[in-house]
Amino acid sequence: MNLYRRALSYYRGEVGRIFLSLAMIAVMTGSGVLLAYPTAILVDSIFGDKGPGPIGSVSGIFFAVAPESKIGQVWALAGMMLALGLMQAVLSMFQTLLGIRIGYGGLMRVRCDLFRKLQELSLAYHKSQPQGDAIYRLSWDTYGVQNVVQGFLQSVVVNSLTLAFMIVVMLQNNWRLTLVGLTIAPILYWTTKFYGKILQSKATEAKEVESRLTTTIQRSASTIGLVQAFSREKDEYDRFQTNVNDSVSAYLRLHWQEVLFWLMVGSILSLGSAVVLGYGGYLVYHDQYVAINKDGGVGLGADGFTVGKLTIFLTLLAANLYGPLQKLSGSGTMLANGIAGCKRVFEVLDRDPIIKDAPDAITLPQQPRTLELDKVVFSYRVNENVLDGISCTIKPGEMVAFVGSSGVGKTTLLNLIPRFYDPVGGAIKLDGHDLRKIRVKDVRKHIALVLQENVVLPTTVRENIAYGRPDATDAQIKQAAELAGAAIFIDKLPNKYQEQVSESGSNLSGGQKQRISIARALLTEAPIIIMDEPTSALDPQHEQLIIETLNNIKSHRTMILVSHRLSTVADCDQIFVMDAGKIVERGTHKELLDKRGLYWTMAKHQLKLEDTEKFPLPSGEV
Image (cartoon, rainbow, N blue to C red):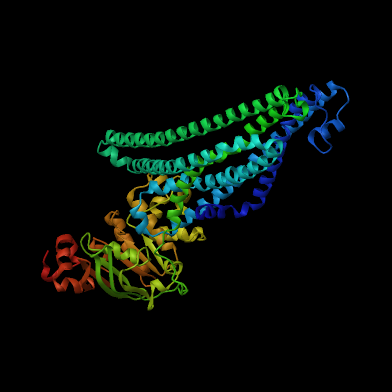
């Protein structure tokens, strides 16, 4: 019931439409009951010997307004059946459209809720889960909420009310025959309960397998260049075919259980219909042909159970008693699939974002601030520290760099500053305020990133550069592009800044994507700019241009660089040399060279002889 209530909560905005839909269903149910009467009136009252029913009954009302001639009464009955049928068809059409509108209204809300949650979840979550799984949950599992609500409202609530109404009507018709017809209800209940658990288990299994298939498709599409480069098309096809076969097998197991369930339901309903027909036929035979008492009495005739009454009863039984019973039983399959999807959606919605605002988080206006790392410790796994006691202070307007070999924790450190992760020990502070005590939105307003992956979006070059500042003017965008060295190639594009970037930026080179990323960061008003390998994809000419750009703006922005190329960081105010998750050296380029330590060793291996005029090594060594 908690799951049902939670699913229903997404339909609060549809309450008016839901009540209107229920009202339409009530009218259709009533007209469905009336549709059983024309045949009975024709058999018993027009062509039979039973006269009009009492005033107020359906038969009595009909004969009060019907023509006196029998043929006129027949045509009146035909008109009555046509009117009721058309009314049901029109109401059914509008009720179906209304149900679709209600369903998509809730689906929209749960998808938006799940998408918002996925945006809030930390990088740790997204890196631990395949992208295909998130796509499947967002695209398909969200239908589970719609299925649960439709199954609960239409199949459970509506059919339960219809069933209760019809039981009352049929008890008044013949209580003994009604009770005989209801003897199958307990059997249906236990059958539905038994198969419901099986179906839910099989539905969950099928969804997990289908999610893996979506992940395989997503990964294959995103790594197609790698696949073709190493001629692994056959292996990828085999992997895809295996996942498809697993998916088909899982759904066949689910559908096998469904058809077994429906076989059981159909058999039980057929048994009930046979018993009712047999007992009802016996009552007609007894009351009309055999009701002779020991004194030689006559049959009960019109006062007994007639063929017309049996016709009404069988019509009501098939359409309005067993119909709702069948739909109630069938709701088990819809609910089983819906519940499986709901659980997978709510599993994500219930996850702790980890990176979130503290209850007492403060607001911190965007302005230049001192960044302090105070004994920062971080690990992805227990007892395996990637960063171990990092401490340093970076003042407004400084340009600093973290250097070191691969795997020493440089990029991890950069991911802590905008709170993609939180340290497990120590603290990172802005003007003395722990980042965990500042609103996440305010922390990130202080920081602009140039990621090593050089992410570009499938939109125009202009919109890519302005992504962090959508309200920027064309002049500001062009200025940022010029500072980043991107204007040189942008002006040569057919549509210049309106040129469309393809998916994953496949129509741009690595260096061009990197310069767009740098321009995007420079355009923002963030006082701190973080660059991860900003010149790794640039030739020496453009590298020098970026270095000059960094030097020009470093007094206006705080610049934090991570780079393997010492020529990029040589002009930094401070250089922090990292090894094994610690800062082992710090100072300017010249100071670090004079120490003849790890930085000196890196410079000795990296700087060429012709570079020594600009970056001289101690004692002229190369």
